[in-house]
Image 1 (cartoon, rainbow, N blue to C red):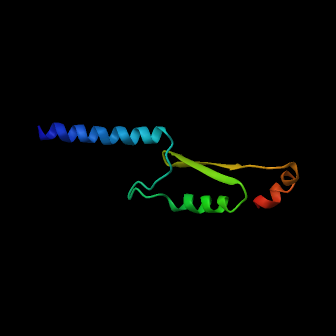
Image 2: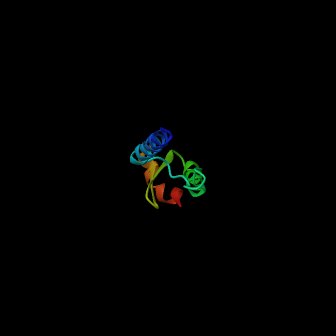
Image 3: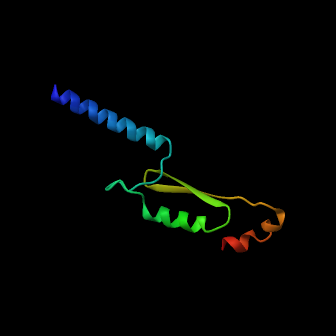
Amino acid sequence: MFISFSVLKDGIKNLKNSVKDLSDRRPINVQDQKKDKIIDEIEDLVRSWDDAYARFCEHGQVYFGEIYIEVKSTNDSNDLPRKIK
């Protein structure tokens, strides 16, 4: 009886983690289940830009990131490469 509860508990835990992985959750450290510090550093840098944000996910040991920048007018678009550097 105890073994069946243990197997059921393990199955529910693994199912929850699998669903989170499929939904591209934010990258976390496997050992302590905390957010990875490099992701915070990159997000802080991107937030310092005007109207920009970043989104990250992980696939195995590889991190993928997308940075979105909203350009409000055509006058700003000519200046965009200088602002990003």
